[in-house]
Image (cartoon, rainbow over all chains, first blue to last red; front, side):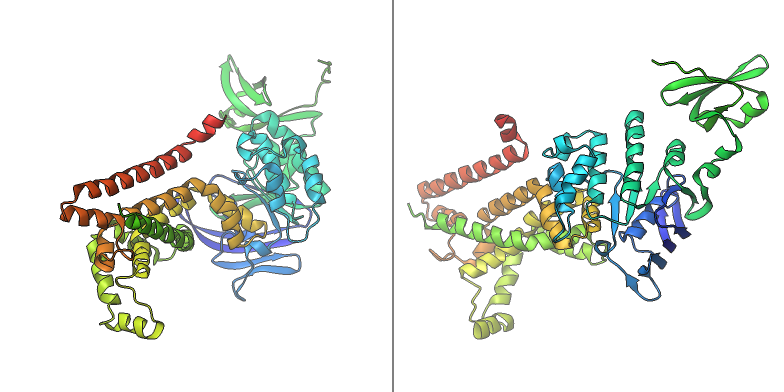
Length: 290
Length: 223
């Protein structure tokens, strides 16, 4: 179990902010920190991994104390068992893919894990390439594989998929889930993408101005369990159009645009850019092979 | 033609550059990462030789290291080191005088790297030293090259400090720039021209090489 109780004065884009955070994460859970930019998500991850020092508070992971301001305990990032995937991937430009992974080995560690991770991340053919020659998705896989070399107990993912296109995102989401289960990790993700959060995480914490304002199981969190639908998709509202007495809402689901009829009261609650759930249960969908 | 001043010039430049390379990396690394309030003070001190007339630096070093005075006397008496009018003194003066030319490119290079490179290495359990040697320095090779070459070239071109602290002793402190001055004073224009031409072309070639390497011309040619 990880328990965090952190206080830190932060300078964010909107001026000064006091981060005051209490949260506990069960071992083996996939947890997402959700919230607008500047809410303190990345700072929380940095404090957990030892890259940023809290003003006061406590970080306990399992039986060990990583940080305790009262007892002057502050483990260095080198001593904390954390795999960190940075938003910009932070691959070492002077090293090949394989060397990037090998650098992460700790002294005397068996090299076999490198081959295993290269295989798992489908990087075998790229192992001699330098990071600058890789695509975004490939870099992401290298960063993830590299974070796993030391067999961390905690995997930290700071918006790892935000720079990728939809197809690659979906593929890598699957991949993150596999990694989480295979290596029995406690995974902490920062993400803005509701579809991604629902798909990946067990639990969601919403941060606002440095505080946890809402938490819950992922599906409950976004109110998805209210409908017992036969099928449902999440998407983004592109356009709301009035036609006679009803409204037509165009929703982007994946790469497709779906038009849904909505009554004026419902439509009034929606605006362009909202994340919505499109569900249906009253009819049988037709499945046709393409 | 007497080759000694030229040989001495390049010996001085080599020794100075080697010492500067070793001491500038920790200084630049500290300056690029610290949040200490002392940072602007140290940055100012490092950069002072850029604007200060070399004679000012030379004058104070001359005073400080003179065996007539307390510090110079102590050095001479206890350690047997005599820094004025000696090669050792020239090296020390050149190191101080060329410090900004080594520290600034390295510091700029280190600051230009994304901080996540360093942080990623730390979260992998690697020490600051290992991170510096294996990750940071290899990724700022152009800056290192620029620092090395600028310090070398700047030491070759040094005049004021050397004259103040080293004087003009053949074989010990008479470097090429001083030899040129000497020959001109003696109305010996041919000899002055010889030294000047050699310095001119050597420095031109050194700097050209840096721009070619850092501009990637050789890589493009190889492909």
